[in-house]
Image (cartoon, rainbow, N blue to C red; front, top):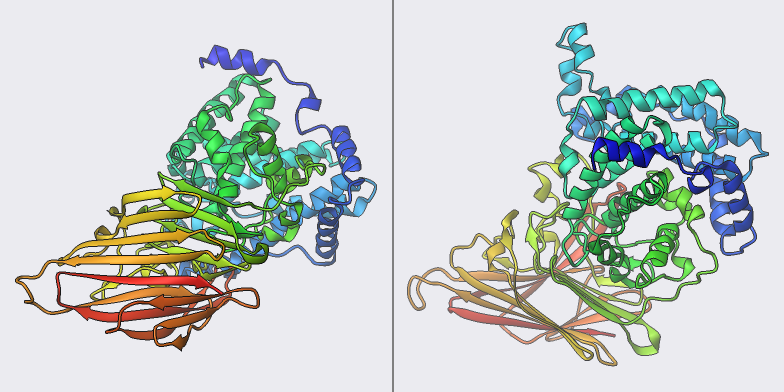
Length: 621
């Protein structure tokens, strides 16, 4: 659109009832929600959190914690304090809206907003330019003023701007004018001014969650704070370009290569921004109209194996609670989006980052009369990311699930995991994905694949002659065959390209997922090698590795059992003899800093022939 077009569209300000900034509308909405028993637990969780925060002092963002990232690469010590403030902000602001007569919530919120406005930077240390603080001590004062990295914009600076702008508008009749003015000034100084005058930022053309979260948050803050239609139009035009780049990161299958967690994060903020843009432009701009959006919206329900357990390829955890506000909003726009049982809703404490935007919309967009239903039988082939996901009701209604992936080893939040798979039953991923590790400088550096959870050593994939898969866009799978049917699903992948082994000519992994009364998986790996001459050369050692949730136990000559808890186990049968089996305990530090143990079940043998095959059957017990 031209500047004149933007001016015309934005000069017509929508009625406040159409925006999210009308206090009386919110009070009516929240009063109506309180009448529904299904909403009461969520409101109780918010109130309990707010009460707890009122009893505790506002956390200090200490320099000694901040510098740990520079000194050691440690993120968690500072981020725990930072996110405690954001959780506090969200809880107190929601309670100030839910219970306007309780002044202590508003009073506590005022102190916190003032403290957030005092923060050195709204960015995380890990997201600031790496050498910024060291550089600060070696330059003159006037140079520092020109190179102040405190106006750098990362995910959380943008989110903070969005949060404060929206909270300030929702409570504008009750917050002190000086506090509202400071919010406006700080959002301008830290985010809106540098966005329009000191860019472009690297994330503006990113094909992953950063472009959606940053640009979506910035344009949302601008909608609340910028009255001038020309200035707002400039922000909106630029942000919409970045939101388009985010969409470009999705292919036609609508799947998120970053995994289900980052789908909820990136696409969630895309939707929050799209909703506000549509409202502010009186329906003239609808960013949910592109056909691809329909498939992206449906990705969430395809990732669930049973209950709240998900396919957690890439950096993601094994549990995926649902933001029901976002889910209900999408389901009303796209009826094919499945709505789960409300018992799968995200609890208030589930978001350790304390994000304001989804927390508010879990109330505003929630439809308590939309009960949802359990996940049903389904098989999905997501052809662009090369994921096969299937779930099936087995004996006594127990859901069993299977997921496998191809793809390549340079995906966003990549793990070297081509050919990896998950087996799930009784609410447990018995052959799991280890999930995401604790974020640090090293985790996002050249050392990334030294971590067991990101290395192929931590996935159910072969090890060929002592060599693991390596990273790189060219290290990709080739899909040879895929078929989804009522009785079985089949996926065949050529994996040789993932391994830098000269003599490995082909490695075809074939999954046959049998969806019978007692579902099972048959896995066949077919190898072909090149030798200098028939039978010449050193033998090659092959290791078939399977990641297990518990210590596997040999229960027969050719069978191991993996205990999945009281509801289900898996028996692993193998059909060849000259093999040595071994179990190795693997330890990782998960995303939240907790030590987690898994077990690698390795079947090893040596070959000197040009071709060999390994076959396994996984049966649920």
